[in-house]
Length: 133
Image (cartoon, rainbow, N blue to C red):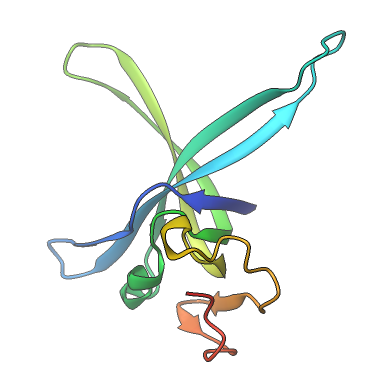
């Protein structure tokens, strides 16, 4: 599955009890549609939590507002909270990441003339000199 979205906050690296590290971040997916018979477009935003295990050093590039292209699989976490209510959340298990632009705070949001940086199985590939932020 492929997702193109913006990060909602800076990525965080968590170290588990067995010393493995995971990069956790959240993305916002914007969509819009025009309902039948309506004159105005309806905008919808879906938030998805993401987990990336391959390369924790990549977290420094995953900052709020950065446009990313993610490849992986979607999982659903269903549970009962302390109040006995049924809850669920989406988690995207990321295999590969492409960085497409800097965050809004960096002023590089519309920097589309540069090549996206590809990350395949946790390894940065060329062009390293053309990072957009």
